[in-house]
Amino acid sequence: MRALLLLLDREALFARRWQMLSRNPTGVERANAEGMLRRLWRTTRGLWQPETVAEVFSARVTKAGLSITATGRRAVLGVSDSFRQRLNRRYGGQEFAVGVQVVTVGSRIVKHCRRLAQAGNIHEQFLVHGLAAELTEALAKQSQSRVMRRARWKAAQRYSPGYPVLPELADQRAIFRLLKPERIGVKLTRSFQMVPEYSTSAILVEKQDGASRPARQALCVMRRESITSARPTRPR
Image (cartoon, rainbow, N blue to C red; front, side, top):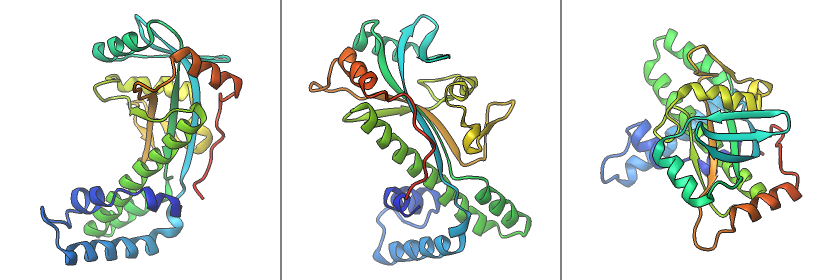
C-alpha cells in the first residue's frame, strides 16, 4: 500500500479534492495538507484493500467497434468515430495489443465513509472520499505500468467506458466478460456502475511515437511471452 502513496497525485488531492491549496499555495497550506494526509493515513490504514486484475489481449478495429479476443473469450466495445479512424490509420486493419484492467481499493473504505455520513461527520467523510478517489487513480496508474511492462510499451493511453472515446457505459459488460473481476470482489450493477464505489476499469492502447515498433511485431512479442493473463496482485 505504501507504493500507492508514491503514485498519489498530491496536487489533485490537496487542491482539487480537498480544496486546501490556493492558486499560489503557501508553505503553510502545503504543510497543513500534508499533515491532514498523515492523519487520515493513520486512521484508515487497515481499511484499504487494493486489488487489480489486468490482461493483455489481441484486438482489431471493425465496423462494430473495437473487437478484443482471447482464448474462449470475445468482446466488442463501441468507440467514437474519431478514435476508430485513428486506430485504422495506425494499424491498417492489423491485429494489435490492448490492455484491459479493473482496479479497486475495496469495500471497507466505502463502509467507513457511510458510517461517517451517518454520524454526521460530513467534513471527515469529504476528506476520506477525496483520498479514496485519488488512491484508486494511483492504483490504476500502477496497474497501467505493469501492463506496459508486459506488453513492452514505452507509453500508453487509458480509456474508460462512459467517456468520449468509449461513450457507452454499458460496455462495462464487455470488460467484465473479458476479465471476470468478480474474483477480486468487483461487481456490476444493472445500471453498469461498479461496486465497490472506488473501482475503475479501462482499456489501454499503446501511445506511439516514431520509435515505436510496428503493430504486428509488438503483437508477436506479446504472444512469444504468453502475456495473456495477469493474476490479481496487491501493491507491496
